[in-house]
Amino acid sequence: MLNALTIDVEEHFQAHAYERVIDRRDWERLPSRVAANTRRVMALLAAHGVRATFFVLGWVAERHPELVREVAAAGHEVASHGYAHELLYRQEPEAFRADLGRSLEALRRAVPGTEVLGYRAPAFSLTDDSLWALPILREYGLRYDSSLLPLGARAAGQGSRLRGGKRHGVRGAGRFAARLHDGLWEFPVSTLRVAGRNWPVAGGGFFRLFPLWVTRGAIRRINAEGEPAIVYLHPWELDPQEPPVTGVAALARFRHRVNLDRTEERLRRLLSTYAFAPLREVFAARLAHA
Image: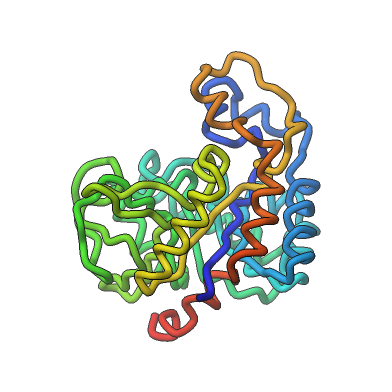
């Protein structure tokens, strides 16, 4: 089965582990590592003949348009990660419209004529409190969202619609692709259902923390359920030389930096085990009905 590989393109200092110690106003003066790290990811994918979806932050696209062009030229899908890396549920609708519009403008300016189909909110911050964002995505012509990490949700059938609730995830959301009432598709990042709960297994800190056999087994089980897995990573997760940041809480520092020196090899082995492609190709048949 073809699975989806997704890369969230952002600077290491834009990670939410650092938001309390790095002011947004200081982003411009910090050394940039995103271009080198993203090219490192692309080289690894090219070596395995794999293409992916790159959710590119508009802030990055404005400053590194050549990087976005390289991503597109390599056959990867270019999608939006928003502009300023602001959590979705912290925004008001008009602020989100402005952020989304600015991100799409930056991507299209970098790669003229590119068709942007998808969006992913920073930190999977689609929650019960921010479902208002979904119709706005459709207003801007997007056809899918991949901002949901359905942790702790009650069991729900494949294709169930999103419903309102509390701030932790979206109550009643299913684990797999769902077509919403306005035609937008939701592609949640992959989880496993164990002991009556959904558990994160397919990317980011979970990919770095768990042994590789856990991720491999999770993808195998998801495929056995008849669904593709959706895996995600950030370019900075392949950068063990990332400069240390002082003042970060111990747990946040651990979550951000654990096993950075092992990510590249783990990804290399994962690419040798399963077949991957961009979201727009894995779900092409469903998106045809968006």
